[in-house]
Length: 175
Picture (cartoon, rainbow, N blue to C red):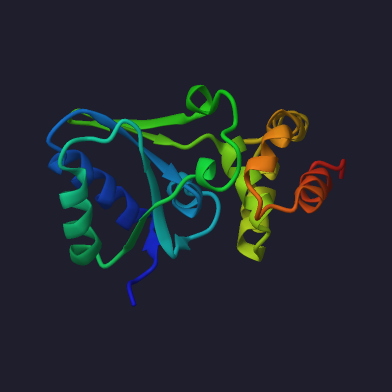
């Protein structure tokens, strides 16, 4: 079993991915790795989830090596694999840094919050509460974006649309 990734390990992973990539591209950090990297939420994450868009040349060789040398779980996973793509996610994704020709971003926090609310695990709900408390995600905008993707839920038969809506509405209730 691999170790959890803390902020230092995630920063080292980013540096190495940028250094080893053989061409330009974008890498989006997703989920717990974003929360940990920001430094004001949880201390570690089980997996470092990434989305490659566009994929930097040579990145899969780097990932294969780094998951072993850093002893960290690296997965290719993003909200748009589990819920409908949230319009404007690229524009809302927050820039982290450029290393060589690779741009690093936090994947859109609204998309992340919606995917976490749909999944509903305790740690996911804590992450959403953190995003709301820190005002990284605003409740009214989160609900508006849910309404935009709601018609597309039919393409995701494993999602219970009623439960998903209830989870979003519950998270967006005034305190």
